[in-house]
Length: 410
Length: 64
View (cartoon, rainbow over the protein chains, first blue to last red):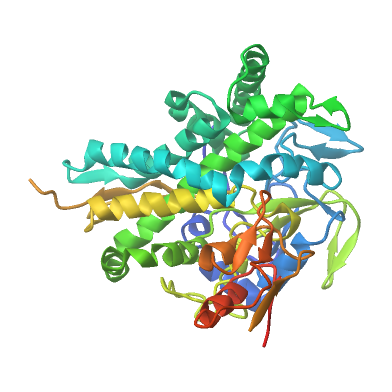
């Protein structure tokens, strides 16, 4: 079975869109611009039926439509065959609370993890993240070229999240393989998806058993100690939350770092400005998050909803098109331009409403540190002539292969 | 100038806190409140406006 989804050409994006169309993955922006004008909520029967909003106000309204639009199955496609997840009342339920939960489970399961991602806690991970970035850069700074996606961006988030979870950072490449198996390759390949889900589940059940015997100062040990209404969490719940933190903490942030570097590799004037004015980097990061938002989530329709004339039916999916919303000219002045000192920027790259990304502070810190350290060591760089950048798409959009060249000091 | 954060709307994005740490406080869950009595010190009006303009939940308001 191929890793690539097999697709037939799209002739009408309004009624038959395809989130895996190669042209759409390379440039979804022009498609969203057209749809916003002609058909702001598009529809398709591909990959399991779904709806695609493209306007900021619509995406925000849909994100708030809880519980008619449920988070029980936040994956953007329906799997070709049901893999390992539960069916409850005919609806598929992924086990990754709180991202896969609706209130009331969402409310308490989210409160369990939020303190680990508060600004105060994230600041404690900054030193380790900076050291990691310096170590990675030291390995290629004298070579004059690097794959910015594979050898840099991809290497950072799995190690940071491993420190947070208290799992072995040297398994980073294995974690990346599992996560791509769930969120990227597995979206269109049920065999890969099932194997990856089972690998993650088995790994965390073993880790949970180990922490029960040998408690440590890490998130898994903390979750084991917690009681809700006098009852400890089940291993199933703890595994689900660990699954979420691993899966959501890797592909997404890696894509965010990669997209920021891609922009700087292809826009020398912005790169030079951030070298000259590094204090502008946090503002620029927010703009990169807006303009190249990595993440699209999905909601599962559980009640019939008429949304501006669109008849959502139970078990349809509604794609939370945060990336498209962030390009809406009704909300953002010069929405199609990347303005690294943009002051007014209510982007929703991390979502909006009760499912706002719990790890957004961590992701932001990783992006800032990764860009700061890269620019400090390699102030001039560009895409290798004759090479192109390969992008992933679907649930998470970001560079997967990005050959970069730069002058060396030697 | 005085700022306030609507706690029913705040979802803990922390955009305000990262842009204007002197004007906001966040709890362990990331939810923000105006620092102190919410009065914006002279010279920090721009920072207050920046926080308003970057809140994805439209949770921050300025009272003159």
